[in-house]
Amino acid sequence: MLLHLKNVLSRDELATARALLGQGAPWVDGRVSAGGQAVARKNNEQLAQDSDVSRQLQSLVLAAVQRDPLFFSAALPRKIFNPLFNRYSGDSNHYGAHIDGAVLYSRNPAQWVRTDLSCTLFLSEPDEYDGGELVMQDPQGERRIKLPAGDLVLYPGTTLHQVTPVTRGARLASFFWIESMVRGGDQRQLLFEMDMALLKLRDSLGEQEPSVVQLTGTYHNLLRMWADT
Ligand code: NI
Image (cartoon, rainbow, N blue to C red; front, side, top):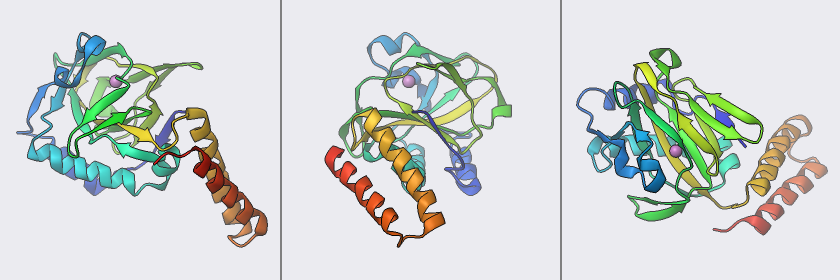
């Protein structure tokens, strides 16, 4: 499943994030967080993780995703990797095709996170840079993703992906991973589809309609069967 969530950051939050990532932000070589196969393919910059700027941005992004009901329904997060931030511009402008590590170490809090889902939150508008598309290979073929600032894309951690060279301007983004309470992608997708259908049914039939009550119960009983906390 590939899901585009719109306006995850408000305009004010986006302006704050952009100001923090502006002049003086502590950018370092992006290879600090790449292991094995990825290190040779990665050529971008990343915000120093233990900086004040990074901590402020991490809280802002985590608060935004955690209040988003669609994010919760789609990801059913058990652990969220503390968000990282990257910049593609100038000579540090691309990341070749790779699959993210299966289990990654997140700091603050220190924990291992299984990367069931990957997430990119765009922080630059598409017209601020050329190139810089997030390209994914999935069974339906190739997908090229370039979203408005403040929007995010959620996709399976198993996806082969790359970021194409930025040839003008700068592409700023946050990226992180989610370990889901529901490990299986097929099961997680069924639950998401059911939850979305239930939203519509509640709207059109009302909360008290017996069939809606029953189906809501069935959703929770499936979640109980499949969830690990
Ligand atoms: Ni990646």
